[in-house]
Length: 390
Image (cartoon, rainbow, N blue to C red; front, side, top):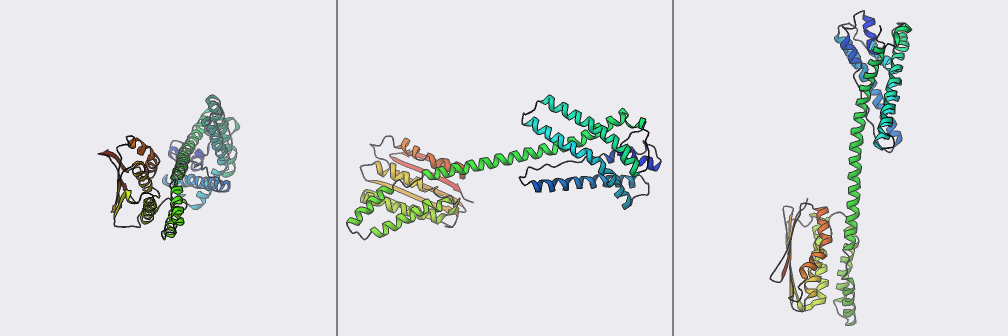
């Protein structure tokens, strides 16, 4: 009985027994793998696959080459390496279509287009037909034309040869499928990550869009009143409003801005709001910053100041105050803001918390490790924020 596979060719050439050459036979069937990529460029995919199969061919040939020398045949030379590579080429005509057929079946199964029974039976049939083709090529092509040996037709398709080829092809295809599934899993993770990133970017844009200068109409009314009085403050107020709107509409589109740009927007906003309250409102803004160019997400501080004006002084009939403190040291930012709450505003806490929902969500997306504390004590509303800027 002849085991008609390429792995058993060399024992015939050397005249040694199959048992003596079993390690060499196993080396010839060392399984390769197929690394499948989902890149959209079809030309790149084809070139990548060609590169893989070329590498696979030479890797198998190298194993045969090294095994021959290890067994002490004295034929470790370049011509034998070329002969080994040439003998592998006909077998690729079976392995390549078989591997891609199983890839197709696995895609059908994973996408639930085909039932498991259909996929498994089709895969088993493909492997069986591949085994028959492997046995035929080994006996009628490789042995005959590469090593000038003739195998009787009656000994070619023995069950042992077919089963041996079946299990060896199964091993090779199993390795290839494993790499494909791992690659598909990693690619799926990349797609999910990209989708989450796009979703987060969309939500960020939406939340930033909600931070509109609703005070614009009040400011325009103030400017109109100043203009009618022919006040010297009119031009400076218009300039402050222009700078603030430029920051909110254009510069805030960037993912990060220098800290000085954010603080300048705070100062412009405070100056514009103070026009509405005159002596009724006392505002203090203190800063201690060791690096004013430290990058920070835009419009991350302004909503707190806006909220203090809207729900503090804006809802009080009496004198009120807003105290703002900002400090930055070693990329750690501390921002606190306190505003008075009139006794008549019993729902101030709920109202202010509702007004900070958007900025709280922004902080969760951009600075997940932030610390935000909101407290109310003795008619004073206090917000404390800690960020680690990197």
